[in-house]
Image (cartoon, rainbow, N blue to C red):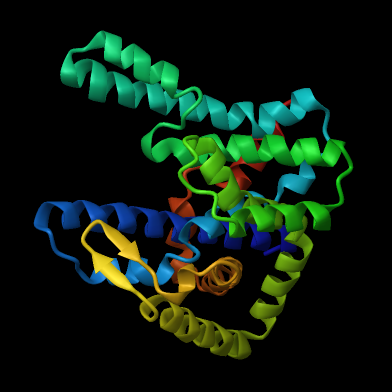
Length: 288
């Protein structure tokens, strides 16, 4: 397997792990809401809470450097319109079926469709934010803002108590942009770390085990609270520490994916990704 193919393989495996965590969360909370009880999946999700969404955005930013220098038209087609298209498609479908056909209220349906333009709709918010993050990163690149400065400012936004501002976009941007930009800015170091992990499997497994224990201790102590539809992490939710755990957990998931990608019987994980990176590359290579 070539280096590039190997790289795409573990990234797709990481996406597969990310999808499992997201589905697990919705499944656990859905059952918890119906039964009023918490099960084993709740505890797994609680442990993964510090990095579950951060790793998704970090992985999404890994290959942005390959297109960031393109002119705005080509960049927008690949990293902005691409996401907004899928967001708009699924948002309209969900609103039409849930609100339009579900309640028989066409006016409310049209209002929610209009609102979805400026306020990300339901569980589709992450697709909307990928477009926003790509747009902002391109703006920063065009303005020649130093990557370390931008990363530092994004970290400050995450640390500050920016919650419930009334704008879901603002709240989610402050919370998660740092991880997307870290994936873009720190990609060379992340790939080197993953390559090192694949060459030093025993040491990597030991470090992953150590991370798992430390992360668990910080999540389940210091005010941890388990509820059927909500989990309150302990020390892991503290400012700065939360950011550090999220970045460490994101790297740990990438490393785990790289090690799993070496096992043929775990190949099914990478096929969970809805749009595989290698498939996109192959498809676009046929374009004139």
